[in-house]
Image 1 (tube, rainbow, N blue to C red):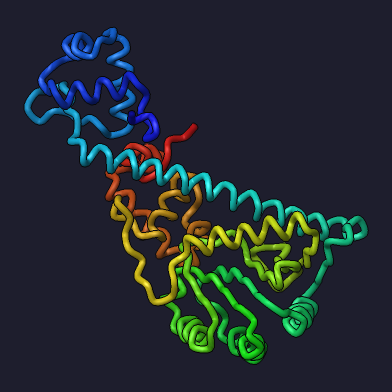
Image 2 (image 1 turned 90 degrees about the vertical axis):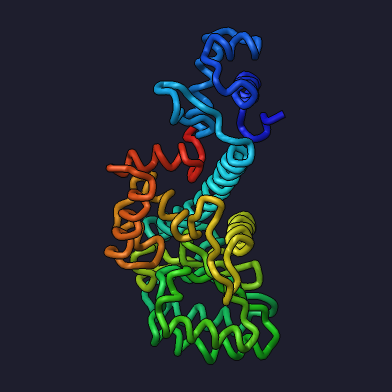
Amino acid sequence: MLTTLGLDAASEAVYRTMLIHPQEGVAGLAMAAGLSEEAVRGALDVLSELALVRPSYEQSGALRAVSPDVGMEILMSRQQAELAAQQLRIEASRAAAAQLIAEYSEIRPAAAHPGVEQLVGLDAIRGKLASLTREVRDEVMTFAPGGGQPQESMVASRPLNQDLLERGVRMRTVYLESCRNHQPTVEHVEWLAERGGQVRLAPSLPTRMIITDRSTVVIPVHGEDSGAAAVVLTGHGTVTALCALFENVWSTAQPLGSSSAPDVNGLTPQEATAVRLLAEGFTDEAIGKRLGVSQRTARRTATELMERLGARSRFEAGVKAVQHGWLPSRP
């Protein structure tokens, strides 16, 4: 019955038996559940990993099952984390594929196929974007990572953005949640929204990207320096995958003006992303760049999360995050 939530039949049987017979040891549980003692011990290991049993406060060395309402919340939270992790892997794969195409076009420009156009230098990139903006008919979709945006770039973009919106072009932009802390970016986002632009906020973004009319994608070759070089992608398969990437991120991003409500574990979207990056071994500097915050802020966030988990190292934080249902179990 609970297999859809990650429990095998033996573990479910032991958990149910422990709820009915909380004082029983391994032998008693085996008899009541109709299992071997070895199977019961294996089930207890699974239940411990899933945080469905805890040490007894009354009897040293004994285990007690957590109540069903708490237990089911833990299992559902874990399943949500696994789904989110799978979605992140899909998004990362799409972004990585596009980035590989961009990097290959820089290394072997002569070998670039007709679906890839290379742009070198900020002037060439801005010129191409201006041309695409004049030609767009229906929609522009943008990822704007990096937290607070350069004020001069936002001001320079307003005439083109206003022209698009006045022509009835649908504009959707995803910024990082950390932009809430940068007043010029907040003012620009509000400026867009007042004129009909749609804006959402995400805890992290896979790459900087602009898609026009679902037919052309512009992405930087180097994430660290988006003004050095970029590529224009028009191949149908690549563009379709990157449109799907945008839609996936858009569907989970928070609408402008809404608050970032904590999840069932009490984590904000930004904290949940930080936990995942922490467990994956990202440095404070790398976490800061993904979240669009300073290295100091990233370090403070990591420290606070480790304290909440009771972890003394990042490796231990990853293990305990899995045990608490903050992260899915590693395959």
